[in-house]
Length: 109
Image (cartoon, rainbow, N blue to C red; front, side, top):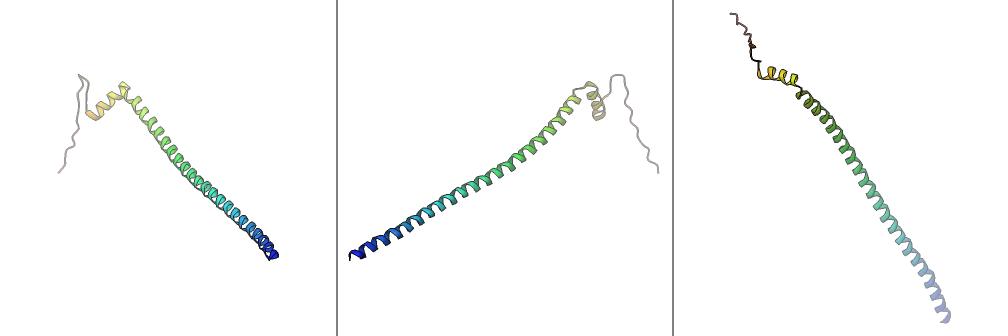
C-alpha cells in the first residue's frame, strides 16, 4: 500500500500542476482578452470622437465664413451712401426738391 500511496501523491502533484497551469493560463487568457476588448472599445470611442471633431470643425469653418459675410453686410450698411441708395431703390424715397417719375407703358390694341 505504501507504494500505491506514493504513486497516488505523485500523480496528484503532476495532475495538480497541470490543473494549476491550466487555471493560470486560462486566467491569463481571460485577462488578455479583457484588456484587448477594453483597448478595442477605447479605439472605437476615439474614432467616434475624431469624427465628431471633424464635423464640429467643418461647422466652425462654415460659421466663420458666414460671420465674414455678415460683417461685410454690416460694414456696407453703415455707409451713408449705401443706405441712401438702398432707401431710394427699395422704398422709393426722394430728396426734398426731387421729383419721382414713373413710366407707364401704353397697351396697344
